Image (cartoon, rainbow, N blue to C red; front, side):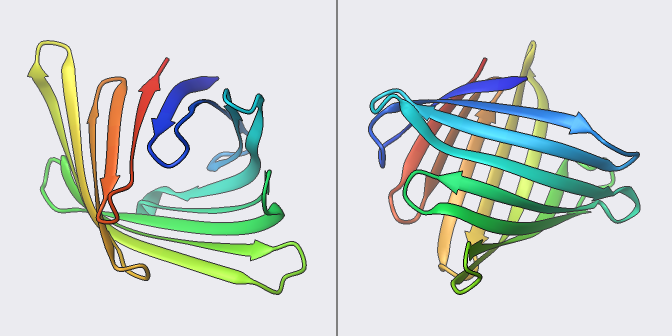
Length: 167
């Protein structure tokens, strides 16, 4: 199980996040996610998703259901594809999209993004770095991510930020 501690300016509380992936086929897995907000002492969301990977296309497709404290149940579909920019694959271009649908299938929210990801291995001894610069096409908001081993810092053009530590 993958667990992490998360803190963001929007919630002003420490959240404990857990993710588990169960292989169910050659290129298919079931992914379960959940998050507990330590301020309110309750889960903020629970997600179950079936993800299928297309190795020949460097792409993935996911279909799932999510329960949140405020919106209750909604369904989601997400996809992502990666295009290497350099021959070694350390610099890549990603295109990704997501669709959220409410439980009555009435309200549909879309999001899409394009991003460059640069992986730098052994910046210092046993220290890897990933830099991600992207643009949310529908919201017209740029964002960035800096990841160093277990630490991740995310920020966007709306001055939202969060920090994550992977246990």
